[in-house]
Length: 318
Image (cartoon, rainbow, N blue to C red; front, side, top):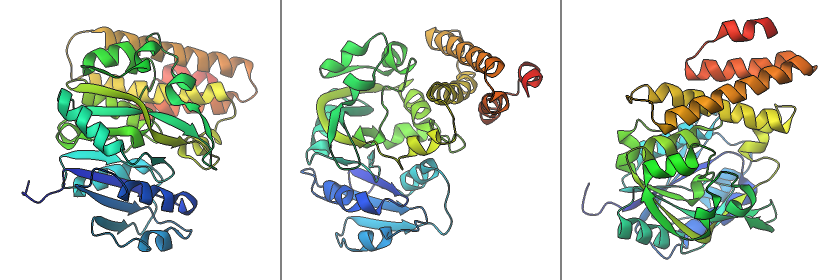
């Protein structure tokens, strides 16, 4: 790393978010911590995103335009990180925004604890910026929810076992700062998983890392009709099916990745239990619901994505 290299690389993937993009870029450039580069990766937007991007002339900005759309934010994450020069990575998603002290406070927490990944509480906001509450209060369901009431630091493996194996307790990359070295060491984000590769990435990185949390809501996590999650939900005809599909896809990919680690620790056991639960529920859904083929096909797709092909289980329902 050269002496003049930025300490933090901010990766901003964008696709057709012109209505949010100006606020997002401003919230990055106005950070109180200033030693960063901003890499904007536009995924072949068809709206006026380019006009918004080119309206900013800050020397820290580098812009990359795709000629074809990748269909997922995760290839953009990886492209940006591979191009980056910083020691730390912040994925600043285009439809979110943040406090001007986010980088300063995450970096301070990271360096004081020597953590590999640090994340902050998020405000949940709608497309108009109206606050709906704190993300952890509204969405954490696991058995150790109370940990998010205050700042904490812990071994990453403990955090996986107590929180991350039950649910994606780090749901928004815009609230996360992590070491680039840890990302590269663990093989980066899985670009073949369409909707939950972030959850898998956090587990992979924290399996041999340290995590810290800032309970102050420094990030604004925008939930709106054209968000990535809502776009995925449109293809699934029931809320429960969506979350089971989302969970099963990640857990099968995690099962495949865990093959590299010997022994049946608690993470293996809990993950396998969830796989069996989710698959069982899907088969029960398919037996009692008119959308039998759609339900089971989603299960089968999840197995295919992760490299597992249990046709003997699903064939009777196809």
